[in-house]
Image 1 (cartoon, rainbow, N blue to C red):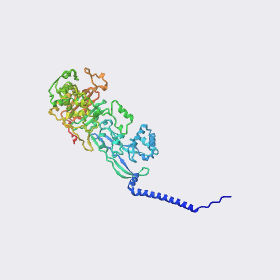
Image 2: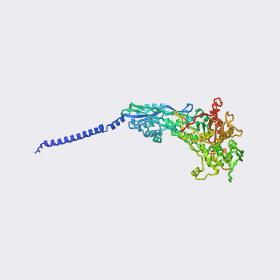
Image 3: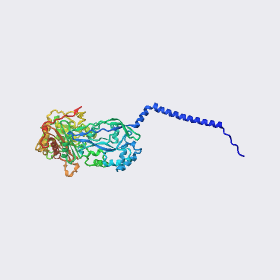
Image 4: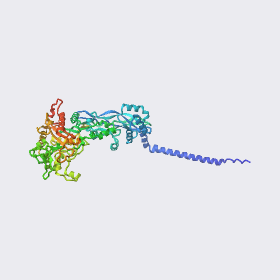
Length: 631
């Protein structure tokens, strides 16, 4: 028998439906309340904050890099210029979220190597703001631009943009003085002002480019732009033009620089030319050199390794960083010390048998002329570069007085105004030896110091400055490369005190001895002055690179080429009214008077003579000029 069908309980079903409707209504009300509350917070409480965030999502500040200041020589020749260039930039926010894939495609399209690919990653890791482009490649050629254009659909976020790039028209001729710019590395990026260097990819690395970086760089500008959701610029809201860097006029003379390079030839060495009236560096040659344009775009590892590992060290600035024994070129300064301290007079004589012996010592300190010069006074000692006379003078002075007088001439300290690479050198003393070697000072060390050997080390620039002080009779002008920076002359914040002698006649007496070097029939460098239309005051120097044992003689045939003596020569002219100072150092050149002397003469001729080979009228009298202001 079939079971009866139960009747619906409509009342119970109604209560169930009502409960469900109430629950749904409560849920909807709660959600609406939360939404209204959230809208209240966003629209009322956080209105200002959210408005700013919204604005930032569509408005961006893009930097405009300033144009770098130009660098000229004293006659207006451009030494550092800016030329148009096409650079490749990437904006990561426009790559579709896969910048690595885009970079892989770029590497493939341009046929780049793994090192280039790694460099791209390094560039992108540097700190930047949203939508700020990062420069990946500088100075694209036409083929690279065409390949990027054809494959643009595969390279989102990449753009070819016109920029200015540094160019050095005279290449290696001024590489060591002007220096060069290069791409900002990670270490530099951490120390630079992130605001001022936004949009800038290069910075001064060496030379004037580095010392005056802040003046040459200028100040960054900006554009406030509105972008769409894809980051494309829709319109410019605000524009502030960048402030270009200041132009710099150098004291260097391009014509004289080329003449000095020609005189030095292919030999390793340096030439420094100064104006004793004001400290202007007229020429500064360090040979061999290198092409600074290689560093502007980013030098390849292979090219840099060739320069870095070359036995001739082309990257090494011999003028500022090379440390050499000055040899006999410092004998005039030693003579000044003897005259001013009253240890000698010009007429005092010393007998030279070809060597010098300290009392109670049997060691012989040899004169370069083994047969000796007999009785010599100060004039003859300078003229003949007599070692025995200066051994005796150094012994009478003692190490302390010798050190103090040499320091007044700038030996063993930095002397330049605007050359950050300059090494200090070394002017030793008894205190220095006790502190560094923990040994006493020996009398024999004073003797060899008197002829520019031993522990003493100077840069060619210091040697030129010491000679300039002889020419200016003790008036200090720090050597400097900048004549004007943005139209203003450089200021010396720490001027050196002039050298004041008890008897000013000592300057002329030493100058007379140096003129005898060049013009006396027995002068050690008379051949270099033959036929000169002006009088030259000069001093040769031949400095040992390796020591020679007692009793042995220097034999060039048994000495490795790079162990042979260095050849040095310093001089100023015209001797009566000095207008130019020249210092030459030739590595392993052996004979200062015979090898370096003619280089000095050739440089002086290039400066003092006109195109017809006649002495310029303005150099017949005293040299005019203004020194950097003391401040």
